[in-house]
Structure formats: C-alpha cells, structure tokens
Amino acid sequence: MKINEVPQDDVPDYSEGIKKGNYALDDKGKYVMVPSKGWVVDEMINRMAYDEYKVKEEEARKAVLAGQKSPLAYYMELRQMTPEILGKTAGIAAFRVKRHLRPEIFARLKPSVLGAYANALAITTEELITVPKNPRER
Amino acid sequence: MTTELITKETLANGRTYIHRTSAHCETGVTSALFRDKGLDISEPMIFGIGSGIFFGHLPFIKQTGLPVSTFRSIPGLVFKKAAKRLGVKVFRKRFRNQQKGMDELRRVIRTGQIVAVTTNIYWLSFFPRRYRFNFSGHNFIVLYENENGFRISDPALLEYTTDCSTHDMERARFARGPMEARGLMYYPLSVNPDHDIRKACITGMKDSCKQMLKIPIPLFGVKGMRYLAKKVIKWPDKLGYVEACRQLAHILRLQEEMGTGGAGFRFMYAAFLQEAAELFGSEELAELSQEMTAIGDIWREFAVVSARIIKQRGQSEETFAKVGGLMLICAGREEQLFKDLDKVARKLKA
Figure (cartoon, rainbow over the protein chains, first blue to last red):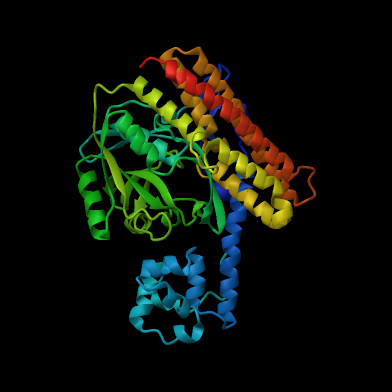
C-alpha cells in the first residue's frame, strides 16, 4: 500500500475525527506511518456489529414494555452483557440472573440485590426499575 | 502528509514522555514503554522481534457468537517475547482486589514510571461510541494523575494524549467476562544496555516462521488460512447467504478494524522486514519485505471484494468462491515467504 492508497474516506459518524495509523510506502519505497481519516469498508463492518447490539437492545426494551421481560434484561443488553458476565460483575450466580430477567421475579427483589445490579450496570436503582419510553438515539 | 505526530507530557518526576501514533495497541504500547527506558525501538521492530504475525482460525472461541479468526499472536505475547529477546526486565501483575490494583497503579505513576494497563473498551468513554464493544484486550499507557482522573497515552487510537476518569479506569481494568484483564498492569524495570538487537531479530523471524509453518494443527498458520478459505467458499450453501455475510464480516472486523494498521498486520510485518534489511544490509530481506507488501495488498483486495459481497447481498458479481480464492493465494504466497525467510534468517549473522 502506497501513501496515496491509504484510505481517507469521510466517516465522521464512526471515526468522530479520530485517525488510525497505517503503515504505507512513500515514493522512495520506504515504510512510514500515515494517519487515515477512515475507510468505508471498515465503517460498514463496524456498523453491522454495532447495529446487532442496537437491535438486541431495542428488542429487549420492547419486551420490557410489553411485560415479557424485566428491565434488567434491557440494561444487560445496553451494557453488551450476558447473564454470565452480568452475574460475575454483580456477584450473583448466572442462573439467578436468568431468573431475575422474568418481570414477576424481578418485582420481588430485595433492595440489596437491586443495588448490586445497579452498581454492576453503572446506573441508579431508580433507573433500573424502568426502561426508557422511546428508543435511545443511535 | 506523513509528518509524525508527537505530543509531549511531563511525568510526576519531571521527565518528559513522548506520545507517538502507532498502528496497533500492544506493539505501540510496548515500543513506547521501551523508548521511555532509553531503548529506541520502532513499533514494527517490536512486532517482528516479538513474533506478532500469525494466523489462526478458532472455531471454538466465539465473539458475539461468531468464530474468531486472528491475524496476530495471543494478546500479551508480543510484549513478553520482545522483552525477553531484548533483555528487558519487566513487571507484570494482575489483581484479585480492585482497590489494591488501583493503589498500586497510583503508587507507581507517582514515582514517574509510566504503566501500561489492559482494559475493556466498552467502559472507556474517551473512545468514539461506535468503537466501544465489550472487548477486554485494549492496552494503553497511564502517565500521571490529574484533576480528571488520569492522563493517558493511547498510541493506537489517538493522536494526542487524553484524560481517563477514575470511574472509567476502574470499570475498564476490572471488567468481568471473556479474557478479563483482572487489572493487569505492566512496565519495564530495566533495559540491558548490551542487548543484541540483531540476535533478537533473528530469533523473532525464526519463531514467526515456526508459528506460520510448523504448528501441527490445521487451524494455525498457513494451514489455518487454507482451512478457513475452503470453509468460506462453502458458506453460502451451508449457512445461507445472510449468515455467510455475517461470518465474512466478522473476518474483516478482525482483519481491518481492530487496530491492525490494515491488511491484518501484513504491512506492519513488511515494515519490520524493511527495517531489518537495513540493519543487516541484506538485499534478501528487502525483497521479502516487498513480497510481504504485495501479500498485504491482496489481503486488502480480499477486504474490498468481501465488502462488496456483503453490501450488495447477492446482487454483486463477486462471489464467495472469489474471496476464498484470494485467501488461498495469500496462503500460498505466505507459505513461500516464510520458507524463504527461514532460510535467510538462518544465514544472518548476529
């Protein structure tokens, strides 16, 4: 790859102005570090993965509003966690986390357990008992 | 256009730290740590000496439910190997207790010693939001404490030094889940002044050849490329078009997106071979560097063609057979390259 082949595509939504380092050949055939603004290929691949998380998050939010899942399920998806990761972070066994994803069981949780979840998810206990009415922007 | 971007910072004991942009986190961090100890060494040299180049298809390790294909060695290994081969004594520690891990970090940076930490990207709010995936394997350097938390240098993603809040730092270092860092922090204690960089290069090259050619498991090295290429060709029939695209996109993510400097580290290795060619005055190494560049260009073409397939969802003229074929070409040429490199490395005099 030569310097003029280093992609310099405008993908501000993805890169937010941050450049990535690339090694490319200068006209004397010597490798130099060339900052790249972004690459559409890179951006597309990233968006696919990012959107997968967004879809899961939005599905969970709707399921909570429909009363099928507890708000814990939404915040777990928001933090890109699984019951296993959330369980480890909160210090609660994964099988219990899975039970707590059911609204009727979640409603009976003690404040101490809710506190542990809120801490693990970096939100307040008040936030944990509801989900946003509208989808999160982006 | 190619001006090297440099930012300077003053550390707790008054010394100056120089921040340089790099293409990958671990090699960039290692190079910066060694430079700080007076061993002036470039990022590609670290990559070559630490035998970072690799290929592995790991169907049993899943990331977001998809098998991982890696273009580099296991995280942490480049640092360890480079340190050993250059005679650098290192401190490397994980922590069971979060408080102890944070206290130790603060204690060390107060002495003016810079410290590398391994973190989970999801919790780093100084990153663009679309970079922030639940992935524990990002390295950066902590310089000193300030009113916002910590001043840090992230050579792989940022052109300048930045701040990281105490909250982010704690969460990112101690995030739970796959590959958890458990507060891993590391830094060099001392550099052997009589280190032999030529010998280190030869060891690194031979080791890379072994990794690429001699591992008797068909998932690693050149064999792994061939194995994956054949799978890619069959994907549309076996998985259906949508799932095949998803899996292909995942290969691209690991090849291009995660700070590889493009083409799955192949250009960085070419840069290493070029620097080594100058060091040894070897025409053969210079030729191998050119061949590695050519291979990197094919990997890039693989990415471009794959992207076209994924974007146009079956409307494209490009096929999975074509991208699989490109991967087979890479495998063939890399096999020849590492065979040649092995011969050349054996002839070089330390």
